[in-house]
Structures are given as C-alpha cells and as structure tokens.
Length: 84
Image (cartoon, rainbow, N blue to C red; front, side):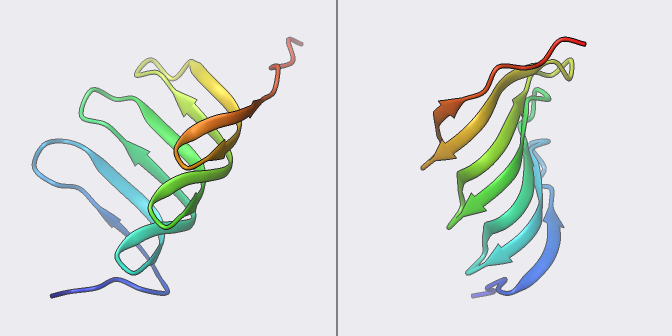
C-alpha cells in the first residue's frame, strides 16, 4: 500500500477529478485544491481529507459559490464578498 505523507503532490484519476496540495496519510492536509469532473472546485485549507478552515468553492465557470470557514466539508461561517 502506498501512502503519501508530509509531501506535496497532485493526483488526477481517469474520471477527470483531481486534487493537489499537501498530503498527510494519503489525504489532502493543510493547503490544497480539489476539482470535480464537471469543473467545480474547492481551494483552501484541509484537515484529514476534508475541507477545514478558510476556503472557497467555485462553480465550473469560476464564479464563487461559497467562501468562508469550513468544518468537516461544510461551510460554517460565511463571509460576504466585497463588490468593488
């Protein structure tokens, strides 16, 4: 069994999904990005393979879906985006 730990890398399976960032025990940990096959993505902080900390979820067209503080893959505290 291969285990990625204390390293930086990227992984793209054949289904078109992908992720890249820092790994611990073969899971995203600290900073990283996860993209789905249809183009949605989450970029931000991770803990044990789950969105945990400051992060942003994007739609496939790169518009922001959600931004804020995530805990266990769920948005906990939302921040309003500033319109300049």
